[in-house]
Image (cartoon, rainbow, N blue to C red; front, side, top):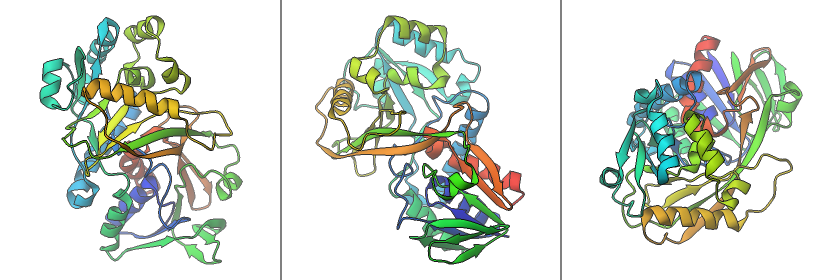
Amino acid sequence: MRVIVVGGGVVGTMHAWQAVQRGHEVVQIEREAEARGASLRNFGQIWVSGRAGGEELDTALRARELWEGIGAEVPGLGFRAIGSLTPVRGEREHAVAEAALARPDAAARGYKLVTAAEARQLNPALRGEFDAALWCERDAAVEPRTAQPHLRAALNATGRYTFLPGREVREVVGAGAVRDDHGDVHRGDAVVLATGAWLSGLVRELAPELPVRRVRLQMMQTAPLGEALTTSVADADSFRYYPAYKSDALDALNAEQAQAPVAAAHKMQLLMVQRLDGGLTIGDTHEYEHPFAFDTLEDPYEHLVGVVESFLGRPLPKIRRRWAGVYAQCTDTTRVVHRQQVADGVWLVTGPGGRGMTCSPAIAETTANELGW
C-alpha cells in the first residue's frame, strides 16, 4: 500500500509512522520547509493527568504507551517518564485534589496526593511555599522542537518514506490522488489530510461545515534553570481547565476562590516542563474569539513568572523566547479528534486541540486500524 500524508506536524508524522511500521510506503507532504505550527509550539507534554475519562483517557494512556515505545526506537525524541506535580494551597485546592483521587480511574492515571516534603523529594527544585501536591506518575515529556526531524530520520532509514517539504496540496484529482502547487500529482491507496490548524484552502473546499475551531495561546521559554526540574509542574488553575478535575469540590473552588484577574481574563493555567538544554517551557493562555490578535501581551507572561517563582522559591532565569501558537480543536470538546472521509480515498484528521502532542500516536493508530492498513 502507498499512503500520502499531507501535513508535517506530529499528527501527520505519526500517521506516516503507523503506515511505515505496517510495511507500507509513505509520501509526506508539508507546505513549509519544516512544520511550524502547534506541533513545535507546545510543552512537549504527554499529559495523561487532566484528560476526561472514557475515550479521551483511553486514547491518552494508549498514546503514552506508544510514545514510550517510539522513544526507545528514536532516542532523539528525548522521551522522559517524568510525571507531573500540581502544588496546592489552602483547603479548597486541596479538596479538588482529594476529589481527583476518588475517581474510579485515579489508579490508571497514577494519581497520588503527596505532602509538600514528599513533593520536594520528587522535585527538589520546588522550594516555594505550598501545602501538598497532586502527583501523576503517568505524565511524560518529549522535545517538541526536534521531534519531527528525528522521527523523519528514522522513517527515512526504512527506505519506504519520502518527505516533500515546500509543497502545498491544492486539489484532489482522483481516488487517493492529490496535486500540489508545483503541479505534481501524488497517487496512493489512501490520502490523510493532517493539516493541523490550517483549515482553509483545500480543507475548506472538502469540508465546508467542519465542526472544528481554532484556538490561540501564548507561551515562553527561559534560559537554563541551572538545576533539574525533575517533573513537569502545573498550578491549581489547571484544575479549572482540565475535565478530569470536575467535581463538587471544583465547583466550590470556582465559586469561592476566584482566579487572579489576569488569569481569568486570558483563560490561563500554568504548565511548565524543562527542556533537555535546561530551559523551562512555560504557558499558557487561551484565546477563542476570531480574528486573533497579531501581537503577544505582557500581562499574562508577568502572571506566569510570579506563579513559577512562588513554586520555585527563586527568581526565574531570563526569558529567551516568547511566542504565540494556534491549534485546531473540535467544537464538541468531548471528542478526541475529527476524522472524516472527505473524498474517495481521502480522509481528514484534525481537531485534537491541546491533546495533539499527547494523543497523536494513538490517533494515528486508530486511523490505520479503521482504514485497514
